[in-house]
Image (tube, rainbow, N blue to C red; front, top):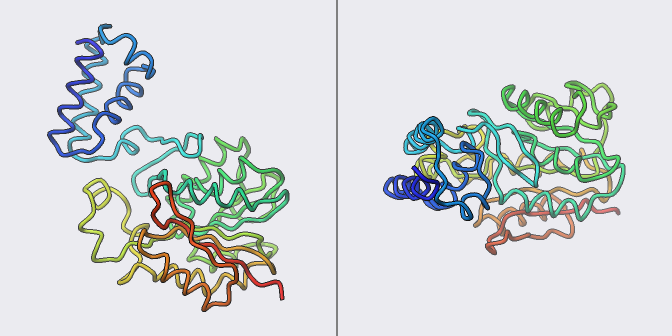
Length: 295
């Protein structure tokens, strides 16, 4: 089989299964499994693919036809130009969440302290520390599985061992297990933060079963389920934030596309100033930010 024939076959198989953007997924499969570049795919379409590689590709496609996410199949995914390890049981990093990182990067200064609640793979916190100078971060998650993966990613991307129990260690990053702010009781030296970020569970419980199979069958419900209206965890984060932020500190929350008005209202009711809703590249509400008043 040639590269072109194999690519067309993958696209046909994925399209027939109702998988969107089959063309992009075919490119990813060829790049990841056959070791081809995008230039190879389009510039050498008549080159042959070995039978061993073709069989590996078909194994991947069969898993994908069962709607298993490519991220879990390959065990890694790119986020903010960095390669993160990804495993079942931990939420997959999404391009929409890069809006959060880009927004926070515009507010970061050297030496700031960041708290990342519901850290998952650690993609938000690790990216912020990678692209800043002298900042420190604490990642919190209720899932031991997520924290193990976040530590693995931090060690791979930030290039240093990770402290699992204290903040402000030599690496600038640590991870704590617990239920939101409750995890901070494990810190040796309690501190306040300049910035709190979170991509919390925000999908209404009765909506989860209507989502695409890749999400409802494979991703952890714990990281998706935001209660009856999707705002259960968001309310708790907002209610506790000011006790853990410095004066002038900021809170950033990723939200669902229709939650901008309700979440911004919750933040104003909690006493946050300069509340704003930041859209993603599709123009949909994606992040709500607010600042603790200085006076």
